[in-house]
Amino acid sequence: MRKFDTKVQHLKYKVLREVARLAWNDKLLDEVMNIPKMIVPGDTPTLRCCVYKERAIVEERIKLAMGGDKSNPNVIEVLDIACDECPVGGYVVTDSCRGCLAHRCEEVCPRNAITYDDNHVAHIDKTKCINCGKCANACQYSAIVNRVRPCERACKIKAISPTRETHAASIDNSKCIACGACVYQCPFGAIMDKSFILDAIDAIKKSKNNTEYKVFAVVAPSISSQFTYAKLGQVIAGLKELGFYTVVEAALGADMVADAESRELVEKGFLTSSCCPGFVSYIEKAFPAMLPYVSHNLSPMAAISKYIKEHESPCKVVFIGPCTAKKAEVQKEGVREYVDVALTFEELQALFDSRDIDITALQEDVLDNASYFGRIFARSGGLSDAVAQGIKEHGDTDFELKAVPCDGIEACRVALLKKSKNLLDGNFIEGMACTGGCIGGAGCLTHGEKNKAEVDKYGREAYEKSITDAIALLK
Image (cartoon, rainbow, N blue to C red):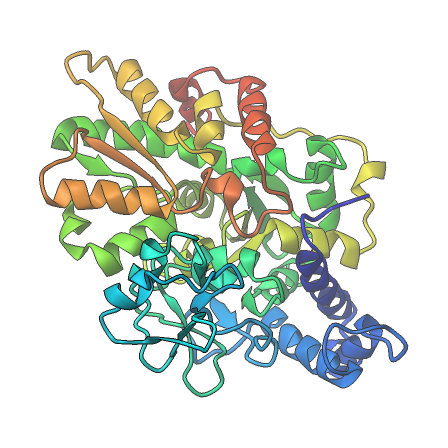
Protein backbone atom coordinates (compact mmCIF):
# COMPACT_ATOMS: atom_id res chain seq x y z
CA MET A 1 0.00 0.00 0.00
CA ARG A 2 1.88 3.05 -1.29
CA LYS A 3 1.14 6.28 0.56
CA PHE A 4 3.92 8.56 -0.71
CA ASP A 5 5.56 9.53 -3.99
CA THR A 6 9.15 9.20 -2.75
CA LYS A 7 11.28 7.37 -0.20
CA VAL A 8 12.42 10.74 1.14
CA GLN A 9 8.83 11.54 2.06
CA HIS A 10 8.54 8.13 3.73
CA LEU A 11 11.64 8.75 5.85
CA LYS A 12 10.34 12.14 6.92
CA TYR A 13 6.99 10.55 7.75
CA LYS A 14 8.59 7.85 9.93
CA VAL A 15 10.26 10.49 12.07
CA LEU A 16 7.01 12.46 12.40
CA ARG A 17 5.08 9.30 13.26
CA GLU A 18 7.42 8.30 16.07
CA VAL A 19 7.62 11.82 17.50
CA ALA A 20 3.80 11.96 17.47
CA ARG A 21 3.47 8.48 18.99
CA LEU A 22 5.65 9.45 21.95
CA ALA A 23 3.82 12.76 22.36
CA TRP A 24 0.42 11.06 22.58
CA ASN A 25 1.80 8.82 25.34
CA ASP A 26 3.61 11.63 27.21
CA LYS A 27 6.97 9.92 26.65
CA LEU A 28 8.54 12.33 24.19
CA LEU A 29 11.16 13.90 26.46
CA ASP A 30 12.20 10.53 27.88
CA GLU A 31 12.34 8.48 24.68
CA VAL A 32 12.97 10.91 21.80
CA MET A 33 16.67 10.04 21.43
CA ASN A 34 15.79 6.39 20.87
CA ILE A 35 14.05 7.25 17.59
CA PRO A 36 17.28 7.30 15.49
CA LYS A 37 18.12 3.74 16.54
CA MET A 38 14.57 2.62 15.73
CA ILE A 39 14.61 4.17 12.26
CA VAL A 40 18.26 3.36 11.46
CA PRO A 41 19.12 0.02 13.13
CA GLY A 42 22.79 -0.92 13.38
CA ASP A 43 22.47 -3.74 10.83
CA THR A 44 20.68 -1.63 8.21
CA PRO A 45 22.53 -0.57 5.03
CA THR A 46 23.01 3.19 4.94
CA LEU A 47 23.28 5.74 2.15
CA ARG A 48 25.91 7.66 4.09
CA CYS A 49 29.41 6.85 5.22
CA CYS A 50 28.22 5.04 8.34
CA VAL A 51 25.20 4.28 10.49
CA TYR A 52 26.27 6.91 12.99
CA LYS A 53 26.01 9.75 10.49
CA GLU A 54 22.63 8.42 9.36
CA ARG A 55 21.43 8.53 12.95
CA ALA A 56 22.85 12.03 13.40
CA ILE A 57 20.80 13.16 10.40
CA VAL A 58 17.68 11.59 11.90
CA GLU A 59 18.35 13.55 15.08
CA GLU A 60 18.22 16.75 13.00
CA ARG A 61 14.98 15.58 11.43
CA ILE A 62 13.58 15.06 14.91
CA LYS A 63 14.40 18.66 15.82
CA LEU A 64 12.45 19.87 12.81
CA ALA A 65 9.59 17.53 13.69
CA MET A 66 9.52 19.24 17.09
CA GLY A 67 9.38 22.77 15.68
CA GLY A 68 12.91 23.42 14.42
CA ASP A 69 15.10 26.43 15.11
CA LYS A 70 12.94 28.97 16.96
CA SER A 71 15.36 31.78 16.11
CA ASN A 72 14.83 31.22 12.38
CA PRO A 73 11.52 32.80 11.25
CA ASN A 74 11.47 30.73 8.07
CA VAL A 75 9.42 27.53 8.17
CA ILE A 76 11.83 25.94 5.67
CA GLU A 77 15.23 24.86 7.01
CA VAL A 78 18.34 23.16 5.66
CA LEU A 79 19.86 20.16 7.41
CA ASP A 80 23.52 20.97 6.82
CA ILE A 81 24.68 17.53 7.87
CA ALA A 82 22.48 15.90 5.20
CA CYS A 83 23.40 18.36 2.45
CA ASP A 84 26.78 17.06 1.35
CA GLU A 85 26.18 14.83 -1.64
CA CYS A 86 25.38 17.23 -4.48
CA PRO A 87 28.13 18.76 -6.62
CA VAL A 88 28.41 22.53 -6.45
CA GLY A 89 27.14 22.68 -10.02
CA GLY A 90 27.58 25.24 -12.72
CA TYR A 91 28.80 24.80 -16.28
CA VAL A 92 30.99 21.77 -16.94
CA VAL A 93 32.55 20.18 -20.03
CA THR A 94 31.28 16.65 -20.65
CA ASP A 95 32.98 13.80 -22.47
CA SER A 96 31.10 14.86 -25.60
CA CYS A 97 33.77 17.49 -26.21
CA ARG A 98 35.46 16.61 -29.52
CA GLY A 99 38.48 18.83 -29.14
CA CYS A 100 37.43 20.80 -32.21
CA LEU A 101 39.53 23.45 -33.87
CA ALA A 102 36.92 26.20 -33.83
CA HIS A 103 37.15 26.81 -30.07
CA ARG A 104 33.96 28.87 -30.15
CA CYS A 105 33.50 28.33 -26.41
CA GLU A 106 36.81 30.02 -25.70
CA GLU A 107 36.05 32.94 -27.99
CA VAL A 108 32.77 33.86 -26.31
CA CYS A 109 33.93 33.46 -22.69
CA PRO A 110 34.08 36.96 -21.14
CA ARG A 111 36.42 35.88 -18.32
CA ASN A 112 38.95 33.69 -20.14
CA ALA A 113 37.83 30.76 -18.01
CA ILE A 114 38.27 28.12 -20.73
CA THR A 115 41.56 26.39 -21.49
CA TYR A 116 42.52 23.28 -23.43
CA ASP A 117 44.65 20.24 -22.75
CA ASP A 118 47.01 18.54 -25.20
CA ASN A 119 44.06 16.87 -26.93
CA HIS A 120 42.29 20.20 -27.40
CA VAL A 121 39.60 19.18 -24.91
CA ALA A 122 38.11 22.19 -23.12
CA HIS A 123 38.26 22.73 -19.36
CA ILE A 124 36.49 25.39 -17.29
CA ASP A 125 38.31 27.22 -14.48
CA LYS A 126 35.66 27.49 -11.77
CA THR A 127 37.50 30.35 -10.06
CA LYS A 128 36.93 32.50 -13.16
CA CYS A 129 33.60 31.19 -14.48
CA ILE A 130 30.59 33.45 -13.88
CA ASN A 131 28.03 30.90 -15.16
CA CYS A 132 26.87 33.16 -17.98
CA GLY A 133 26.24 30.16 -20.24
CA LYS A 134 27.73 31.69 -23.38
CA CYS A 135 30.10 28.76 -23.86
CA ALA A 136 27.25 26.24 -23.71
CA ASN A 137 25.28 28.20 -26.31
CA ALA A 138 28.32 28.40 -28.58
CA CYS A 139 29.28 24.71 -28.44
CA GLN A 140 28.08 22.93 -31.58
CA TYR A 141 28.25 19.54 -29.88
CA SER A 142 26.24 20.56 -26.78
CA ALA A 143 29.26 19.31 -24.86
CA ILE A 144 28.97 21.98 -22.14
CA VAL A 145 26.05 21.61 -19.76
CA ASN A 146 24.80 23.46 -16.72
CA ARG A 147 24.57 21.09 -13.80
CA VAL A 148 22.30 22.72 -11.27
CA ARG A 149 21.52 21.26 -7.87
CA PRO A 150 17.94 19.95 -7.60
CA CYS A 151 17.08 22.46 -4.87
CA GLU A 152 18.42 25.38 -6.90
CA ARG A 153 16.59 24.18 -9.99
CA ALA A 154 13.37 23.83 -8.00
CA CYS A 155 13.64 27.33 -6.53
CA LYS A 156 12.44 29.60 -9.33
CA ILE A 157 12.99 32.76 -7.29
CA LYS A 158 16.69 32.03 -6.66
CA ALA A 159 16.44 31.95 -2.88
CA ILE A 160 18.87 29.00 -2.57
CA SER A 161 22.60 28.99 -3.13
CA PRO A 162 25.58 26.98 -1.80
CA THR A 163 27.57 28.40 1.10
CA ARG A 164 31.23 29.19 0.40
CA GLU A 165 32.49 27.26 3.43
CA THR A 166 30.73 23.90 3.22
CA HIS A 167 28.85 24.16 -0.10
CA ALA A 168 25.70 23.16 1.78
CA ALA A 169 22.50 24.80 0.58
CA SER A 170 21.65 28.13 2.15
CA ILE A 171 18.24 29.82 2.05
CA ASP A 172 17.95 33.58 1.67
CA ASN A 173 15.00 34.40 3.91
CA SER A 174 14.59 37.79 2.25
CA LYS A 175 13.63 35.97 -0.96
CA CYS A 176 12.13 32.66 0.21
CA ILE A 177 8.33 32.39 -0.06
CA ALA A 178 8.15 29.04 1.82
CA CYS A 179 6.52 27.27 -1.13
CA GLY A 180 8.49 24.12 -0.32
CA ALA A 181 9.48 23.29 -3.91
CA CYS A 182 13.02 22.66 -2.69
CA VAL A 183 11.70 20.40 0.07
CA TYR A 184 9.98 18.09 -2.38
CA GLN A 185 12.78 18.08 -4.96
CA CYS A 186 15.82 17.50 -2.69
CA PRO A 187 16.77 13.84 -3.30
CA PHE A 188 18.47 13.55 0.09
CA GLY A 189 15.76 15.17 2.17
CA ALA A 190 18.26 17.80 3.29
CA ILE A 191 15.66 20.58 3.19
CA MET A 192 12.54 20.25 5.31
CA ASP A 193 9.60 22.24 6.55
CA LYS A 194 9.26 22.70 10.29
CA SER A 195 6.49 20.66 11.81
CA PHE A 196 3.98 21.90 14.38
CA ILE A 197 2.49 18.47 14.85
CA LEU A 198 3.18 18.64 18.60
CA ASP A 199 1.03 21.77 18.87
CA ALA A 200 -1.85 19.94 17.21
CA ILE A 201 -1.49 16.97 19.54
CA ASP A 202 -1.29 19.28 22.55
CA ALA A 203 -4.47 21.08 21.49
CA ILE A 204 -6.38 17.81 21.10
CA LYS A 205 -5.15 16.37 24.42
CA LYS A 206 -5.93 19.52 26.39
CA SER A 207 -9.42 19.75 24.93
CA LYS A 208 -10.27 16.64 26.98
CA ASN A 209 -12.54 15.09 24.38
CA ASN A 210 -13.75 18.54 23.33
CA THR A 211 -15.21 19.32 26.75
CA GLU A 212 -12.80 22.14 27.66
CA TYR A 213 -12.97 23.57 24.15
CA LYS A 214 -13.69 22.28 20.66
CA VAL A 215 -10.92 21.44 18.20
CA PHE A 216 -11.91 21.95 14.56
CA ALA A 217 -10.09 20.44 11.61
CA VAL A 218 -10.26 22.65 8.53
CA VAL A 219 -9.23 20.62 5.49
CA ALA A 220 -8.09 21.99 2.14
CA PRO A 221 -10.15 20.94 -0.91
CA SER A 222 -7.09 19.22 -2.37
CA ILE A 223 -7.66 16.49 0.22
CA SER A 224 -9.89 14.92 -2.41
CA SER A 225 -6.79 13.98 -4.43
CA GLN A 226 -4.85 12.57 -1.48
CA PHE A 227 -5.07 9.36 0.59
CA THR A 228 -5.75 7.45 -2.61
CA TYR A 229 -5.67 4.14 -0.75
CA ALA A 230 -8.85 5.04 1.16
CA LYS A 231 -12.17 6.81 0.60
CA LEU A 232 -12.53 10.48 1.47
CA GLY A 233 -15.29 9.69 3.94
CA GLN A 234 -12.90 7.36 5.78
CA VAL A 235 -10.31 10.15 6.02
CA ILE A 236 -12.96 12.37 7.61
CA ALA A 237 -13.86 9.59 10.04
CA GLY A 238 -10.19 9.19 10.85
CA LEU A 239 -9.89 12.88 11.76
CA LYS A 240 -12.71 12.52 14.25
CA GLU A 241 -11.09 9.35 15.57
CA LEU A 242 -7.97 11.44 16.25
CA GLY A 243 -10.04 13.66 18.53
CA PHE A 244 -11.25 16.53 16.35
CA TYR A 245 -14.73 17.79 17.21
CA THR A 246 -15.70 18.03 13.55
CA VAL A 247 -14.25 18.63 10.10
CA VAL A 248 -14.97 21.73 8.02
CA GLU A 249 -14.04 22.36 4.41
CA ALA A 250 -11.70 25.23 3.65
CA ALA A 251 -13.66 25.19 0.38
CA LEU A 252 -16.49 26.88 2.25
CA GLY A 253 -14.03 29.64 3.05
CA ALA A 254 -13.19 29.65 -0.67
CA ASP A 255 -16.86 30.28 -1.42
CA MET A 256 -16.74 33.21 0.99
CA VAL A 257 -13.61 34.54 -0.70
CA ALA A 258 -14.98 34.09 -4.23
CA ASP A 259 -18.09 36.03 -3.26
CA ALA A 260 -16.15 38.89 -1.67
CA GLU A 261 -13.28 38.93 -4.16
CA SER A 262 -15.60 39.13 -7.16
CA ARG A 263 -17.29 42.16 -5.60
CA GLU A 264 -13.93 43.78 -4.83
CA LEU A 265 -12.72 43.18 -8.39
CA VAL A 266 -15.78 44.84 -9.94
CA GLU A 267 -15.38 47.79 -7.57
CA LYS A 268 -11.63 48.31 -8.17
CA GLY A 269 -11.28 47.19 -11.77
CA PHE A 270 -8.03 45.26 -11.18
CA LEU A 271 -6.99 42.77 -8.55
CA THR A 272 -4.50 40.04 -7.71
CA SER A 273 -5.65 37.10 -5.62
CA SER A 274 -4.76 36.72 -1.94
CA CYS A 275 -5.46 33.01 -1.52
CA CYS A 276 -1.96 31.60 -2.03
CA PRO A 277 0.42 32.70 0.75
CA GLY A 278 3.45 31.92 -1.40
CA PHE A 279 2.18 34.23 -4.15
CA VAL A 280 1.38 37.03 -1.70
CA SER A 281 4.80 36.65 -0.09
CA TYR A 282 6.40 36.86 -3.54
CA ILE A 283 4.64 40.15 -4.20
CA GLU A 284 5.74 41.49 -0.81
CA LYS A 285 9.38 40.59 -1.44
CA ALA A 286 9.84 40.99 -5.20
CA PHE A 287 7.07 43.35 -6.35
CA PRO A 288 6.24 45.59 -3.36
CA ALA A 289 4.83 48.28 -5.68
CA MET A 290 2.07 45.79 -6.57
CA LEU A 291 0.85 45.39 -2.97
CA PRO A 292 -2.03 47.90 -3.36
CA TYR A 293 -3.53 45.57 -5.98
CA VAL A 294 -3.60 42.50 -3.69
CA SER A 295 -7.11 41.55 -2.63
CA HIS A 296 -7.94 42.63 0.90
CA ASN A 297 -9.75 39.36 1.55
CA LEU A 298 -8.37 36.70 3.84
CA SER A 299 -7.38 33.37 2.34
CA PRO A 300 -10.06 30.62 2.37
CA MET A 301 -8.29 28.98 5.33
CA ALA A 302 -8.33 32.17 7.37
CA ALA A 303 -11.83 33.21 6.27
CA ILE A 304 -13.56 30.03 7.44
CA SER A 305 -11.39 29.85 10.56
CA LYS A 306 -12.39 33.41 11.45
CA TYR A 307 -16.04 32.39 11.13
CA ILE A 308 -15.47 29.35 13.36
CA LYS A 309 -13.68 31.39 16.03
CA GLU A 310 -16.47 33.99 16.04
CA HIS A 311 -19.28 31.45 16.32
CA GLU A 312 -17.84 28.44 18.19
CA SER A 313 -15.54 29.84 20.89
CA PRO A 314 -13.90 28.56 22.95
CA CYS A 315 -12.25 26.53 20.24
CA LYS A 316 -9.02 25.86 18.38
CA VAL A 317 -8.58 25.45 14.64
CA VAL A 318 -6.08 23.14 12.95
CA PHE A 319 -5.70 23.60 9.20
CA ILE A 320 -4.65 20.56 7.17
CA GLY A 321 -3.56 20.91 3.57
CA PRO A 322 -0.83 20.53 0.96
CA CYS A 323 0.97 23.79 1.66
CA THR A 324 4.15 24.53 3.59
CA ALA A 325 3.61 28.28 3.09
CA LYS A 326 0.44 28.03 5.19
CA LYS A 327 2.72 27.42 8.17
CA ALA A 328 4.18 30.86 7.54
CA GLU A 329 0.76 32.42 6.93
CA VAL A 330 -0.61 31.34 10.31
CA GLN A 331 2.19 33.28 12.00
CA LYS A 332 1.06 36.54 10.41
CA GLU A 333 -0.90 39.21 12.20
CA GLY A 334 -4.49 39.05 11.10
CA VAL A 335 -4.34 35.27 10.67
CA ARG A 336 -2.75 33.81 13.80
CA GLU A 337 -5.75 34.79 15.92
CA TYR A 338 -7.94 32.54 13.77
CA VAL A 339 -5.73 29.53 12.95
CA ASP A 340 -3.83 27.83 15.75
CA VAL A 341 -1.85 25.23 13.78
CA ALA A 342 -1.18 24.40 10.14
CA LEU A 343 -0.30 20.83 9.16
CA THR A 344 0.36 19.10 5.84
CA PHE A 345 -1.17 15.91 4.48
CA GLU A 346 2.17 14.23 5.18
CA GLU A 347 1.79 15.11 8.83
CA LEU A 348 -1.83 13.95 8.90
CA GLN A 349 -0.72 10.53 7.67
CA ALA A 350 1.83 10.46 10.47
CA LEU A 351 -0.88 11.36 12.99
CA PHE A 352 -3.14 8.54 11.82
CA ASP A 353 -0.38 5.96 12.10
CA SER A 354 0.91 7.32 15.41
CA ARG A 355 -2.46 6.29 16.87
CA ASP A 356 -2.59 3.06 14.83
CA ILE A 357 -5.72 4.27 13.06
CA ASP A 358 -6.39 2.24 9.92
CA ILE A 359 -8.69 4.60 8.06
CA THR A 360 -9.54 1.90 5.50
CA ALA A 361 -11.34 0.01 8.26
CA LEU A 362 -13.53 2.97 9.28
CA GLN A 363 -17.11 3.68 8.27
CA GLU A 364 -17.36 6.64 5.91
CA ASP A 365 -18.29 10.00 7.37
CA VAL A 366 -19.64 12.97 5.44
CA LEU A 367 -17.92 16.15 4.29
CA ASP A 368 -20.37 18.32 2.39
CA ASN A 369 -20.47 22.02 3.16
CA ALA A 370 -19.14 23.86 0.12
CA SER A 371 -19.98 24.43 -3.54
CA TYR A 372 -18.35 23.12 -6.68
CA PHE A 373 -16.65 26.50 -7.13
CA GLY A 374 -15.16 26.52 -3.64
CA ARG A 375 -13.77 23.04 -4.08
CA ILE A 376 -12.01 23.71 -7.38
CA PHE A 377 -9.84 26.39 -5.73
CA ALA A 378 -7.45 23.46 -5.26
CA ARG A 379 -6.26 23.52 -8.87
CA SER A 380 -4.89 26.19 -11.16
CA GLY A 381 -7.68 28.14 -12.83
CA GLY A 382 -10.25 27.19 -10.20
CA LEU A 383 -10.14 30.54 -8.44
CA SER A 384 -10.69 32.39 -11.73
CA ASP A 385 -13.68 30.18 -12.50
CA ALA A 386 -15.09 30.87 -9.04
CA VAL A 387 -14.64 34.64 -9.38
CA ALA A 388 -16.38 34.50 -12.75
CA GLN A 389 -19.25 32.64 -11.11
CA GLY A 390 -19.39 35.21 -8.30
CA ILE A 391 -19.66 38.06 -10.79
CA LYS A 392 -22.44 36.17 -12.58
CA GLU A 393 -24.36 35.49 -9.38
CA HIS A 394 -24.11 39.16 -8.36
CA GLY A 395 -25.61 40.17 -11.69
CA ASP A 396 -22.65 42.38 -12.70
CA THR A 397 -23.25 41.81 -16.39
CA ASP A 398 -21.45 44.99 -17.45
CA PHE A 399 -18.10 43.85 -16.05
CA GLU A 400 -15.90 41.74 -18.32
CA LEU A 401 -13.58 39.45 -16.41
CA LYS A 402 -10.20 38.99 -18.07
CA ALA A 403 -8.55 36.50 -15.75
CA VAL A 404 -4.87 35.61 -15.95
CA PRO A 405 -4.44 32.23 -14.20
CA CYS A 406 -0.76 31.82 -13.26
CA ASP A 407 0.26 28.19 -12.93
CA GLY A 408 3.44 28.28 -10.85
CA ILE A 409 5.64 31.09 -9.57
CA GLU A 410 7.38 31.61 -12.92
CA ALA A 411 4.05 32.41 -14.56
CA CYS A 412 3.27 34.69 -11.63
CA ARG A 413 6.50 36.58 -12.21
CA VAL A 414 5.70 37.12 -15.90
CA ALA A 415 2.21 38.43 -15.14
CA LEU A 416 3.44 40.76 -12.40
CA LEU A 417 6.21 42.09 -14.64
CA LYS A 418 3.72 42.78 -17.42
CA LYS A 419 1.35 44.54 -15.06
CA SER A 420 4.16 46.63 -13.59
CA LYS A 421 4.92 47.82 -17.13
CA ASN A 422 1.22 48.25 -18.07
CA LEU A 423 1.50 45.47 -20.65
CA LEU A 424 -0.84 42.90 -19.07
CA ASP A 425 -3.95 42.02 -21.01
CA GLY A 426 -6.09 41.17 -18.01
CA ASN A 427 -7.78 42.58 -14.91
CA PHE A 428 -7.44 39.68 -12.44
CA ILE A 429 -4.23 37.79 -11.67
CA GLU A 430 -4.81 34.40 -10.09
CA GLY A 431 -1.46 33.60 -8.51
CA MET A 432 -0.53 30.03 -7.58
CA ALA A 433 3.06 29.50 -6.42
CA CYS A 434 2.96 25.75 -6.99
CA THR A 435 2.65 24.21 -10.44
CA GLY A 436 -0.84 22.84 -10.84
CA GLY A 437 -2.09 24.91 -7.93
CA CYS A 438 -2.57 23.58 -4.41
CA ILE A 439 -2.62 20.01 -5.71
CA GLY A 440 1.09 20.50 -6.46
CA GLY A 441 1.94 21.62 -2.94
CA ALA A 442 5.06 20.29 -1.23
CA GLY A 443 3.03 18.77 1.61
CA CYS A 444 1.00 16.50 -0.68
CA LEU A 445 1.27 12.75 -0.34
CA THR A 446 1.05 12.38 -4.11
CA HIS A 447 1.64 14.75 -7.01
CA GLY A 448 0.46 14.46 -10.59
CA GLU A 449 -2.04 15.38 -13.27
CA LYS A 450 -4.52 12.85 -11.93
CA ASN A 451 -5.02 15.06 -8.90
CA LYS A 452 -6.73 17.73 -11.03
CA ALA A 453 -9.31 15.23 -12.24
CA GLU A 454 -9.99 14.12 -8.67
CA VAL A 455 -10.54 17.72 -7.55
CA ASP A 456 -12.99 18.40 -10.38
CA LYS A 457 -14.82 15.17 -9.65
CA TYR A 458 -15.04 16.10 -5.97
CA GLY A 459 -16.38 19.53 -6.94
CA ARG A 460 -19.14 18.01 -9.05
CA GLU A 461 -20.24 15.93 -6.06
CA ALA A 462 -20.99 19.07 -4.01
CA TYR A 463 -24.57 19.32 -2.79
CA GLU A 464 -24.51 23.11 -2.99
CA LYS A 465 -24.43 24.09 -6.64
CA SER A 466 -23.83 27.84 -6.31
CA ILE A 467 -21.61 30.09 -4.24
CA THR A 468 -24.70 31.86 -2.90
CA ASP A 469 -26.21 28.58 -1.71
CA ALA A 470 -22.99 27.59 0.03
CA ILE A 471 -22.62 30.91 1.86
CA ALA A 472 -26.27 30.67 2.94
CA LEU A 473 -25.19 27.77 5.14
CA LEU A 474 -23.35 30.27 7.33
CA LYS A 475 -26.43 32.36 8.10
